[in-house]
Length: 307
Ligand code: GLV
Image (tube, rainbow, N blue to C red; front, side, top):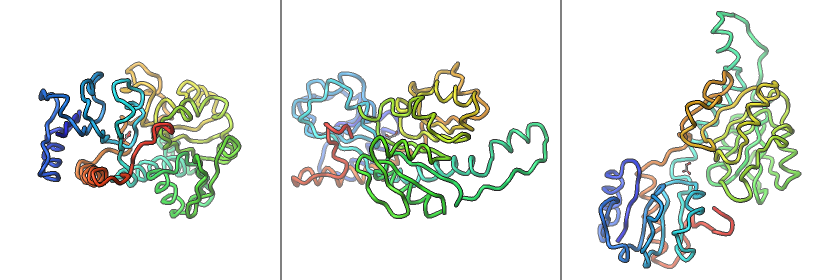
């Protein structure tokens, strides 16, 4: 049996999964099931204790790219395979989101918005894509496509990853020195890293100070990776020009949080790259079939690595 926990569109996922796997019994939370007969689970953010008693559980398919919340729980035995989505329509959305932030910064839209509020007609000097340095943190299935997409549009792109993998049009770097060099050389910093023990707290005040004056930050990774108070402080001091933030250390971002009201900050509610049901189900179906054949599915999480 396959047990589904989807906080949104559960009926859509159930219909798609049942159609894609006609031979398999698909049940949907909160319908009670005999935990011992669950072999596969498809989930996004299941409640604590969800996996209790699922002693024949073989694999959990995650309805997203990030598995940080799942890795942090204690009711999922390490013998269970965890499989996340890889791209599944998210890379294109992430590229669009990044591009929105890049254009906002490069074409000075924040400054023009400010001028508009005072009915000021004041052209500012042009900035070309070829003069705009973008640092991309995270070059996986999603970050890699975003970095290459921005490079294709003429931006000067540098990318930081664990392995320093080379990508077309992207200057690759890795390690602490690579990160420092990238930060010093980024007019726009784009974070798309997975949240792991290594990346939590990565963008702390010290590292953010290494960005050039007037830099713009786009965070579409995870909130825990970016020190939000440091961002506010650096904005106040004029070191940062602005930020486009999609993820926060607490979500939803509390109503009283100053980021909501900062004139140079754009806040979106974790929508940069949303899970698309059709793409997700077709990838999960292929991954489950691979597991059954004894093959390694795309997106199999390496627990020691954390993603
Ligand atoms: C969204 O944040 C995801 O991990 O897919």
